[in-house]
Length: 192
Length: 192
DNA sequence: AAGAATATATATCAAGATGATATTTTTGAA
DNA sequence: TTCAAAAATATCATCTTGATATATATTCTT
Image 1: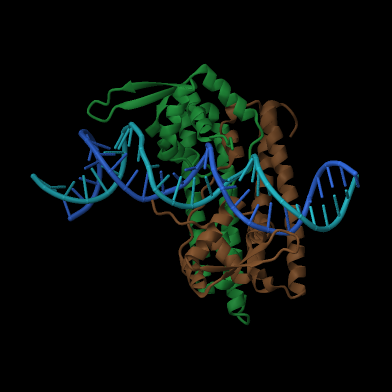
Image 2 (image 1 turned 180 degrees about the horizontal axis):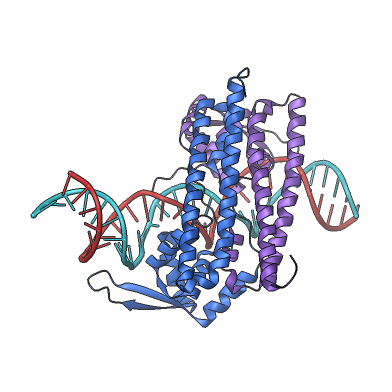
């Protein structure tokens, strides 16, 4: 079946902001979109190659001054058109596989203490993630303040960050509530 | 690289409740875990085959009375042990690819009206999903009331449903807030 | 001073996962 | 009578993941 490689649009979106290397794309995606979009070298390099082959990007090689050479990619006009075509299309539904929820769902087969531990760890992770979002937000605002190329994206980056913040808060609350239910089930006479 | 096929644990989890066919597994997963776990025939049938090969499940064939024969699978004792081993392990992080967020993130390249449309549609989807959760919850409670095999899972299924409810509510709120921001940006003098 | 870890860079590839598609027969709705 | 849906069995091309490999410089720790 002819499915569509979506990494190409992530890459086109980044290249539309400025030319960058495969390594740059991974680095920037790690700190900007990783909370809602998974991307890794395994997909970036082959996709860069095919974007060049399809005429959506061009590549130049910069000498590394002792470091490995940098292969820098820039979007083309037909790449911009292809990005615009895809952006206008209805977004697809995400495919979810949340292992913690599967284990909760099968919780009747688990030691309740173990399940509580998992939920406690998940809550900690959510709180840590929220702290990271605060840093990301501060960093984003400082980039804008110093006139970064990303300034025109700030509003939208903050919008996507808000999603992540709401999501993490809502999962942390769900963890607390679920832990309380499990503890209550273990000690039905305990004071609540 | 040695990754682990997680479909096998979904299947073992279902078979632990009762014996079922590949078609049953798909059907039951569609109405119980689909909101947080994606599973389809493409993975179910090959995995059933390998579970039998590994001794974690056994298969019997039931004549279909004119319908195609049913291939019914049942978990084995070593299958239960394998499931217990996996359930006790720390859950992995989900891999997320939320296309709507990617488009929001790249929103500087989009027609604001089109982005608003997408967010409005997402909000509608969330509200529809919440209504489905209400039905799922009612159905679950009625299954328990009539003494279904699923009764001992109810608490855990409700727990996972709560996650989905919180998630959908939080996304719907995020959509409303984002739409308001986009509209305010279009009409900066408009009354809020 | 030496060693380890990290950063800067280029990637690959085996295996997991997706989802469109195929086939057959019965049942129910139009 | 015809068509769609359900009940069943699956397959497979393609997308996606993430561990792994290689090389050099820089930074940090011992």
